[in-house]
Length: 174
Length: 94
Image (cartoon, rainbow over all chains, first blue to last red; front, side, top):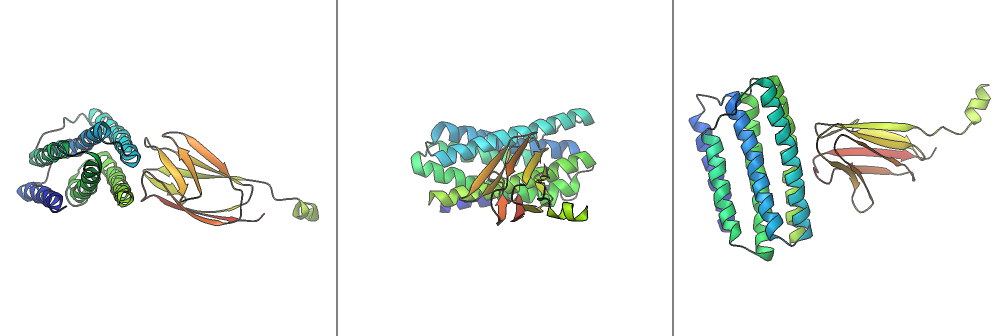
């Protein structure tokens, strides 16, 4: 538990560091699109790992929901960037998110059974919380294009829903 | 004439609740037993209308699902996939 909290905290620091680096220079719409899309892809990857490793019905159902929702919202994001003729641009925040998610997946790969289930769902709570923070404080306020802003706002509600759903699943494992 | 109308049993209605961008709208509904609630899901996400330990209606993306109200009761319902989506249903006897 301590180790996982530390990871979540480290993730927050990384994201804050990236946020600070951009404080004077808000992320552009192409960067915001990249961050939001990356956040979805990373959660799908975490879910795919859970679908392979877990045998718990609650976890499997939750992971399937994550794949379905994040793929659906990312399809909307792709349609939107195409329509707006925007090319998503890699950036420090996307890199920080990816680095932390890769480390977390490597750590989860070593766990099995109930230990995996708990670590996965706890990380899902922390991850969605972290992305929600970034959406609320950085991405939504920085977005210039109204349609992108609106999609991010829907994304925030979706991620907040997932955070509560993950908390519910975590409660059921106890 | 007025008397006839007053004496006629209340006609069952269909009440529509739209789901868009993870919001039930209207969030609060008043209906009578025998009425139908139809949830119209405009999102690309699957949603549910769930009352814990009682009933659940699945509402797949871009489709509608409905339920006929059977008993006079007030319900707080939510979406099981996105528990931040909440609605309220107050059902009274016709």
